[in-house]
Image (tube, rainbow, N blue to C red):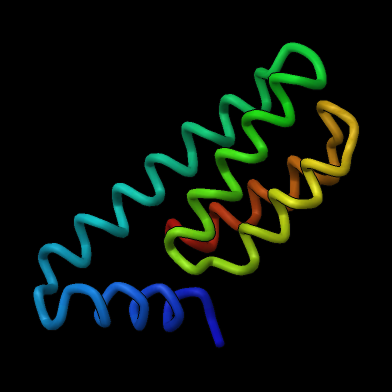
Length: 98
């Protein structure tokens, strides 16, 4: 299932047919995910990295985004600043922004 379909299905189950609220929540999700990603990129040391990755994973879980959860899991297992992990998360956020 594509991200857009999964997110829309999860939000529609909670919101019904309120398209304005659906758009608002999608925007809030992207804004929050971007903030957590910025915190991950700017993390000082392993503790900050792990905290930011966990926050991103929790946010992704709350919206049912399995791909973003997997990317955040990868960050939790990776060394701080891992470029492959950061690229995977950035790619996922780009898909969400579409």
